[in-house]
Length: 160
Length: 160
Image (cartoon, rainbow over all chains, first blue to last red; front, side, top):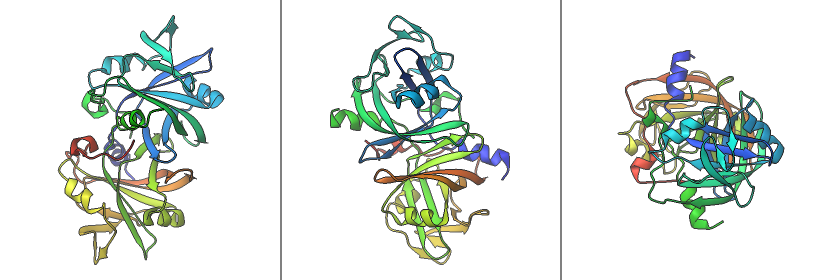
């Protein structure tokens, strides 16, 4: 397998861009992620691959839950705020107002149009990202007109 | 959680459309899938969620490998050919010419611009789709100019 072929072929997968958040009530983790997919209708499962050495992965391993905030196509700036380390000031996370999710208490960014929260059912810790399989236990829509951001359209990529 | 909120929020995830293929040398499985993501750089892992009662899932469980063919933005017609049951005639799969992948022998559609093949490392059989975590062992590019098909752009969706 040629490394360049592998890179191009894996970068052909289409992704959105999401802010994945977690908290144990004391520490907060939040990061821009794109390795996310639904994985079952019944029960409603999702899979997220989270950098294994990240604060978010450590918190999720402890609490067994996380939230996903879906960015709209005009919210790349919000996403970029979560490519750096996590800072909490009052009710803001990296400068974005948030509230706790109803079922698991993970941070929901008030500005994003769609969100869901999930409880981990299975963990695969094999690579440099940890695969969390999780059941969706809460979801909400703040703006049903919003078109989700497509990672490819930003000129950035994460994969390969 | 309101079912309608869950549906809309989960459909906000962005996806491509892929033809996932598998064979044990006798039986063939091939289907249009979108629940796919990379899950690690090193080793290069992907995750695919495949309908648990499908022929493809049964073959993958047996062989421990599969291939993914990435559709280009003008190849929805090819994708649709794989929404029906699998038929092999000569060197065609649902009417599409194919060849065996170099490492695992799974079918590669000659018309698609990008492909990869992977060996299953972990399986999570919890929902109505089986989650296969798999290491990419082969990949290729036939047309590096091709833009991968975005499921949202087709007006179809599979999720929620």
